[in-house]
Image (cartoon, rainbow, N blue to C red; front, side):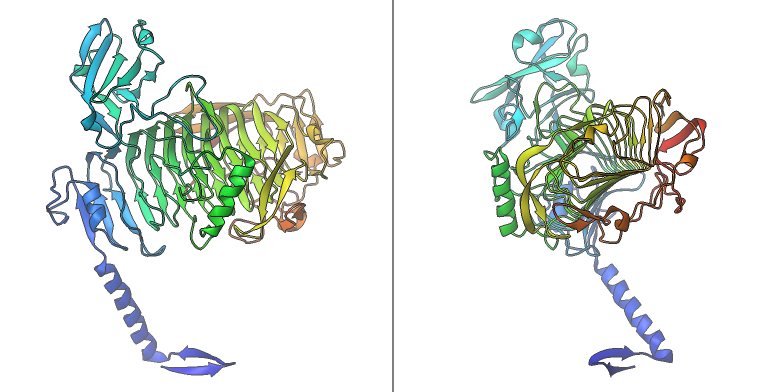
Length: 624
């Protein structure tokens, strides 16, 4: 074994038995590193005075967090843990993380709530409890009101607290008189210097004989300082947190949140009943915290964030995959700048901002500002106010093979972005499929069942240097500069809405049914105005089947494979359309990850789906 100089560089030369010796040395090194990692166990039968071994586990996750060092693993065993985990440190790299995991096959629940008993009946169905304010320590959700930039209270108060009856949230009402109305399950609160008073209508149930819980913590898992990097959280059920409104100009605290860090993995969790947001990949407080509600205000926040180190080296690169997120008041997943360079894949998100009495501009299944070079793929998002909302600085982003339906507003909202970003192989089934307040998007091989809404914007927003957070310039959104290749429009208005777009459009290979109109200069297309595909979804257990009818139309199209070369450059940033990992784009697989015909790929998300009445299982998808 020796070093040899080649062109001024030294190379290690290993021969024969020395190769075997080197392999043994490397293996021993890796084994030593593995053995040096600690394994901490947590059990509701444990004690925080224990060492945390399997036979002598700790009692709380927080106690294990204080002990864990980079490379360590915390395994939590079956039970309900009512605590806020505030990890005091993170890992050092992707290969040396701190792991928090539920024990395999065991149900581990972390709750931001506490059980409340001692209810006294004041009239039929209505009960009252008096809680000393000392019960809440330094945070009382029944004094704290939801507030922040772009929040609309609709003329009334909303507390971050909540009341749950057997796991189901009751409705916070505006007055004690409303609690007295029969047949409702609602609650109301007041506080003074010593006590918090909660009235609740439990209908015909006695709350002292049921499980009644109230939010008492602002989060379940969130570091109190930024820069706690490389943390993995897997396999937990987390619920019932008194989360605050997560404006893009504020520190964003979710039921789980990364707090302006890098390299988290949040996977295989069930996340529910956050008053506002489930998962935040969000901003720090130092760059601004509310009172910045304007485009100019957010531009200032972005500038300060850059000065404070917002870059790929320091922030983002998170993985959020295979989680189930539901019953959240504002958003399932949100993030302002902190979600750049990340992957959001395989998540099931539903019942987001449904029947909530407040409003604002931060509500969606997935709501991201600045998802630079971020992949959003294979998510099922439904029964939400809005499925996916990409707001500002969507550049290098790919939105691929998502299933979106039953959105009360739209499935995809792209706001004041300049591209390049790619939207491919998605199934958009809501009445409004796309709200386009952007430019520079490439839409390929999607099913678009609903209408498209266009709304150019005068606001000047950033675009960036290639694969970077560094700002290259600001521009308004004139509209256009979009590419629509090989999509199927199953209704709605189609693409003639872009006939008067200010910037050039590039349109080819689309199918138009059921009244959808083609783009005025498109030549390679098929349009059958009176054909109704009769599209419908059937949900059974956890599976979703798509039923629809197709005529034999693809044989009439001469479609091109969608690639970096075909799409060219987005006009404003003058950058090519590539994958988030910076490799050249080639949409050569379909929704099911099956290979496409590269000579003449089928329109829509399914390669060669057939004709006539079709039934396809579209969820769950094979895990990649």
